[in-house]
Amino acid sequence: MKFATELIHGGDPIDPQHGSVSHPIYHTSTFAQQSMDHFGRYDYARSGNPTREALEEAVAGLEKGATGLAFASGMAAIASTILLFAPGDHLVVCEDVYGGTFRLLSTLFKGWGLEATFVDATDTAALAAAIRPETRALYLETPSNPLIKITDLSAAVALAAEHGILTIVDNTFMTPYLQRPLELGCDIVLHSGTKFLNGHSDVICGFAVARDPELGKRLRFIQNAFGAVLGPQDCWLVLRGLKTLKVRMEEHQASAQKIALWLKEQKQVERVYYPGLPEHPGYEVHKRQSSGPGAVLSFELADFALTTRLLEGVELAAFAVSLGGVESILSYPAKMSHAAMPPAEREARGIKDTLVRLSVGLEDPDDLIADMARFLDI
Image (cartoon, rainbow, N blue to C red; front, side, top):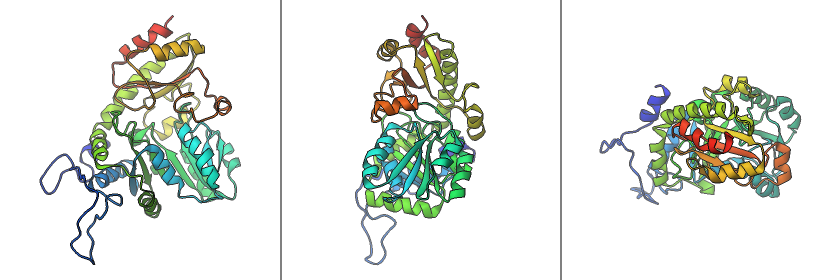
């Protein structure tokens, strides 16, 4: 099946007992057993739930992985995946990683004895130079959040294979519709499913998908032991959201392309970060490993006062945390997604106080442009 068809008909979309075309929501904490010697497929809902299993299989299928796991948040998926490693291990991480991931690695897991080195992952030589004997994985985002940097995944996979380590990729911005890192040889894909996979700003959720069945078993053990699973009602909402992923992403990115071209012509805009622009330094690499530029872009404004006026004055784009919803969302990384990163660290990475991130929704792009033009077209 092609991607759009798989979204609707992949897995087991029709209830075999009653023919419901909407997967049932199993609101239960436990399952009755018929025999002391032979338990059924499900026993306790933390360990498995039919609604969650349907979602996990759907996401794994879209990413072309062996095992998919649904978590209570994107950070729960990330933290549970990092539990694959042990004190004394070391990770090489892209330097402008999501602020929540930076906080997790630089505080909780650092105190636990897991070390992380943050490098410019667009430079494969820098990744190679950061690898130590105790390194166990490369942790990447491409495009990265919020500077939209592009990492060459094929080169990263080759480097990881040379050293016998894992390649982990946060694929939240692209979704499996536009980019499938597992097909490029990466080992684990992560998602904040809160964003484009669900797509309606009404669920907090996360996913981890493993390419190798044995690695998937290790992650499933951690999911069950750690217990940060996604509830059945939320699973059902994401199952519903997934069905429109292709049509949403097509509209999202078509509008984002138009807005990025408009932004780069504005005198008050210093720089636009978007992989759909040929002048983006990662344009060719992104084009090679993805089938579209996506719907998230960032841009730097001329001064802080203008940044404040834009964020507080726009009417159609919500000034809010998060991204990937049907509504456009303007975010301020310095105080939102990367608030956990110390100012000096943000500045060193190029995350300035005049940087704005825009997740383009499904509004007419001309209306979004007109709304921002009141502040930028001066």
